[in-house]
Amino acid sequence: MSSKLSLPNERVHAPYKIAALVEVLAEQGIDPAQSLKGSGIEPDEIYDAAVLTSVRQYATVCSNAVALSSDPATPFRTGSRLHLSAYGMYGYALMSCLSLRDYFRLGVKYHRLATPTLTIAWTEYSDRGVWTFPDAFTSNQSREVQQFLLEQQFTQHVTHLQDVAGKSCPPVQANFSYPAPRYAAIYEEYLCCPCAFDQETCELIYDSSILDHKPQLAHLHTAALLQETCDRLIGQAKTSIGASGEVYQFLMRNPGEFPSMEAVASAFNMTSRTLRRRLDAEGTSFVTIVDDVRRSLATEYLRTTKMSGDDIAMLLGFSDTANFRRALKRWTGKSLTELRAL
Image 1 (cartoon, rainbow, N blue to C red):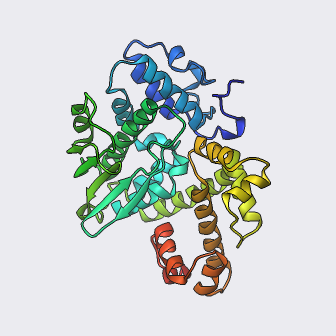
Image 2: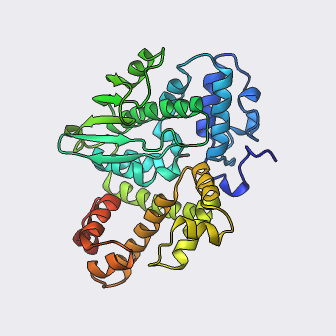
Image 3: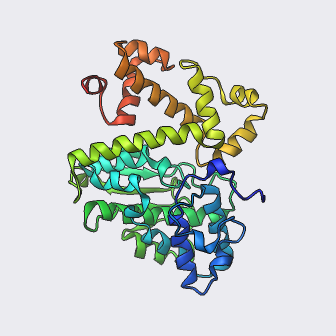
């Protein structure tokens, strides 16, 4: 098997992103077989509900798109076709949430279920909310492919928020950490906002006034049911997928102990560089997995024990309880007191 192909236990996503990209390329006269070359996926499989694919396979198709297409709008058109209804439980959970603030928070929490090609982070300030993409240009993909993925990701975010809000809800600005390309006008056409280049970070900025808006399909009981399902799916994914699953299981076997990445890599008889590369190929990082483990343990301790916040903070390796409380708020959107009352 080619090194570009994913291992069987990495294939956990329906091929909806691959299908959308292949469709866009086909409209340009590019044969689907060429678009899928080297991915291990056949043209008749991209609409098969039983077929599972990986982030690595999708990246291969994106690499093909960069090589085959001369149309710079390709990633934008693909992103604009990827509506939340194509994302299964993840998409429906976001569409049924009770506020746009919940939508942004849950988008990060459940991002692992969405064939993630980039890490995303959400920060709310007094006057704005900001999506950031901290690892936009740190993968082992070519610069062209990484920019393709970022352009598609930005367009997906704009498309998804419109799906949830039920109306156009554009950002107030999009920032990019690289020089303006020759086709910069396409950015504003698809993102529907001013775009600035040569900025410090890649980010989408929204006015905080939208955050309390109620999504068009908001429903209390449906939201609770779908979020519970997503929590279960996230748990299954963490413990069963590739190198990230191995690391997650290793850390969960010794709760309260958080060895360094170097120590974990050594336990797997590999270098930390190799482990970092494998986690990067799966769309995650060691820091993210440690954060996931802490979140899972915190939730379990709060649900099944009467330990104090101070004790839980110490067990999870936080320097003080205040840092633990801030982490809880970031993970769940709720305070320690609110979580205890559930």
